[in-house]
Image (cartoon, rainbow, N blue to C red; front, side, top):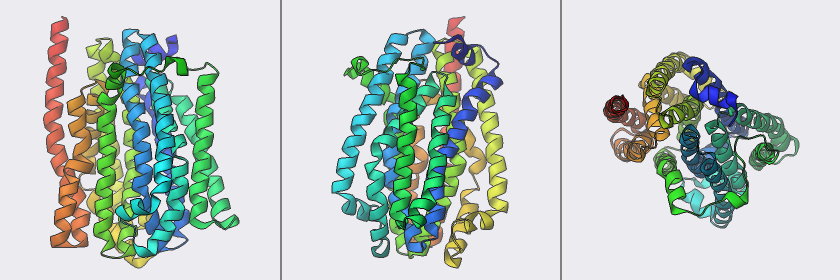
Length: 450
């Protein structure tokens, strides 16, 4: 591992380290948001039914990303700790195993998706009017599953070794291609919603090739080769210890979105499209937090592995403060400018009315989301599987699914909108308890070192 990477993770001023690790990750995640946002803005010009279809297909796309994150975050957390311990050989085996495993899963996902696309989309809540659009959009995204999964895996592995700029540049290239190709395929070649999906797949493929070339040219701190792949229960156990909570979180988030789609569908395609708009706007805001979290985790994991508790505690404190300040600013923006923000996606009055209200309600507890995500990221970085699992599954799964099943029965469309607020409040209570527990545990470990 190069001295520069070691310096960033192990000795550089914490604020500078977080900046160097987090900014490329944040930019990378925002770039990743482009794939969904640009598609929806262009697809929205095709009509409300087409826009509703993108919301139906989103869980399918999210599950593709979930598998990539499972290997990427799981292996990345372990690799950071291994590098902190100086165990480069096992770090290489972990990275190689994760990348080739995600490749195999991508191929399997494509086969399953193509054969069962219609029943899958029915399960995801596609209305009769949106189904044709959803099939055209979903089948092509499924074909590109291998690229999305490998991108997620390799991006997180590069961040874990202190090389976030390469991950960012590959995603930036793909996003620029997506912006260029979307109007060409959708309107120029008259492929409609299919063109949006094809543009996304081509862009993801370009990102994959750039990341692979970095490894193949020997630029990475870790060598990646099939000969390093280790089919070991112990190794997969370390990857899945953190990867599984991530996967389950994404699965439950997708399941909750499916339930929301079914609930919204009873109120028409306008409601379905409006809920989708609110979700994608919030996802854009959360992508910044996800990126910051991805920059924070290797810093926390490396110093925890190196037993540098003073540096670890400082990183935790600064990360929570910065993330919380960001959330407060975004809350003000979303509350004050809800109407024009929503208006970028649709000019349908019914869609605008529901989405504007939804965005403001969703924002009520947004100031606390930075704290929640940083504590969740801390549990993941330290390899604490149970805590990571509970925190990962709470907001979009354990609490959201019951509320979205119950509240709409009594409050109609308002029940759907307020379900996330209730889930966020309950998650905040749980996270506060877990934060107190992990801080106490770290203090105890630090005292035992003295």
